[in-house]
Length: 151
Image (cartoon, rainbow, N blue to C red; front, side):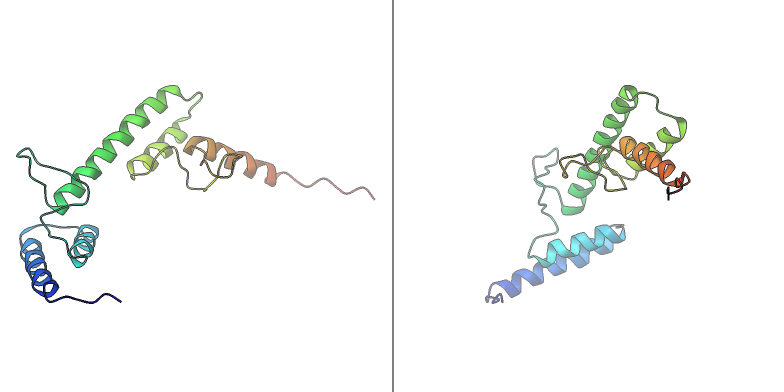
């Protein structure tokens, strides 16, 4: 159990006041608000961030600006990977392409899959298209009629 020191209460009050003022002036999504409140509840200033993101003036940017910057960078990276992948994969159907794009645009890597299928090593996820194709093959295999047992 943490023991609150005499210094902790005033610092915490300053951070909570900053939070209240910040929330009153910014439009935040529910997820942003939740993340910001958790950050502040851990005795961090609204005007700091855990990602070491700095503005053009060389100063640390606030938590929400840093989060938005990181999300923007992540989405740009995913779009670049998607473009390169689409050029490299053989026989990509229109449906596979549409499903892949939806998957990636939702913020998920194409090197992961919704089926939680993995390589033979048991750790490395199959990429999205490989997993979808494998699921399709398995579905077709199990929809075939069972052979009659000899007897």
